[in-house]
Length: 222
Image 1 (cartoon, rainbow, N blue to C red):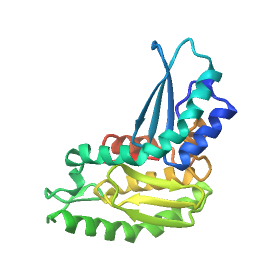
Image 2: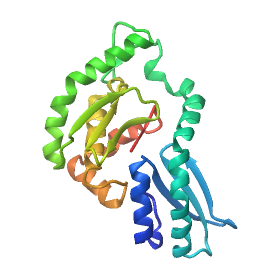
Image 3: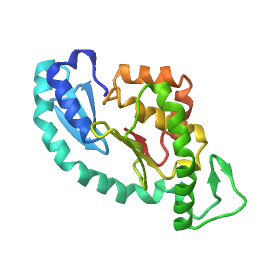
Image 4: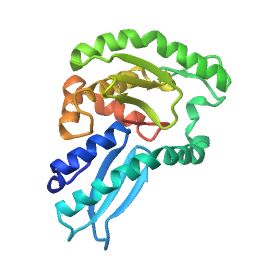
């Protein structure tokens, strides 16, 4: 969640919660524009608000757009995948194989690499969750691995189900640990509020390094 302090309100909190359940994060910025503008991106609803618009007017406008954003999000994700996949699949191509950030002496094709990464991630996941769940103070009911191109991880807070991208083993294992911590912290906070990031920092003080390493790569975090 990225909101100017003046825009935080009970009406917006309700909108934020509905959007979070659909894996969409709300971003509001004040700009020198004539009208309130909405832009739906993968897992983000970007809102540009004129400087002269009151916080109450902005909250009402956002609330009216929540259903629209949720209904159209799947189409936005599909369009993004078609446009970005050829450029973003570097962990999946036929070049040198990376395992936990270290180049291996053998190579695999796309399908073989996918199976290999799934096997490697499956092997370490139980121990990593056993390590971090007590530290974060939250427990997932279910953990799944998925071929995700726009996300490194996601969390269904109602079902307490966490998904991890099978391409994480291409990067240092600390990146996978950070993703696990990030998603577990969503079981305390469904959005990306200041309280959420403080919970992440309390559990993993060095998280920013691994966050930055993943930023701009294949996926994002929810």
